[in-house]
Image 1 (cartoon, rainbow, N blue to C red):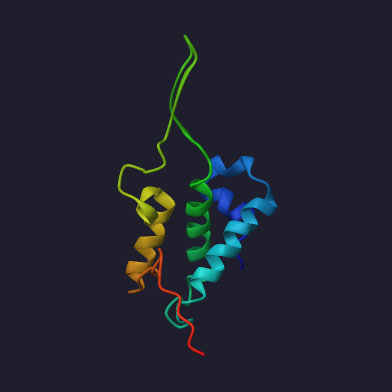
Image 2 (tube, one colour):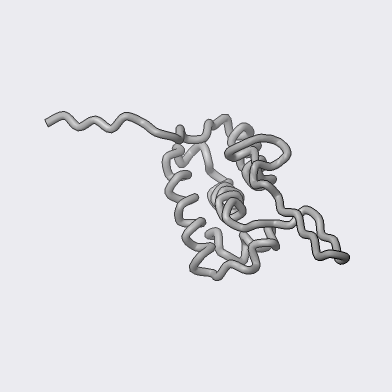
Length: 120
C-alpha cells in the first residue's frame, strides 16, 4: 500500500489545511530519500517510512499554535525547533522516522552542503 495524503493526515491532523497535491510533494520527496536505502533493509516498512518522513517535512511548513488566549487575542506558535532538538528530531514524526531507522539499523542520508566535483 503506497503512502497517500490521507494516510499522512491520519497521523498528523494539523496538516488538514494542505491540499492533496501539496502533501503529495512531501511524500514524493520522502520516497526519493528512502530510495537510497537497500530494499531488503526496509522490507515491511516501505509505506511507514515515507509516511512519517512526509509528515515531518510537511510539519516544518505549517505553523502550529502552542497556546491561545481569548482576552486580548494572544496566540503563541511553536518555534519550529521542537522540544527535543533540531532537524528530524524537531517533530514527533521525524523522531518516529529516526526510531524506525534505528530499529532497521539504518542512518539518515547525509544532508547539508557538500562538495560537487566533476572530472572530465
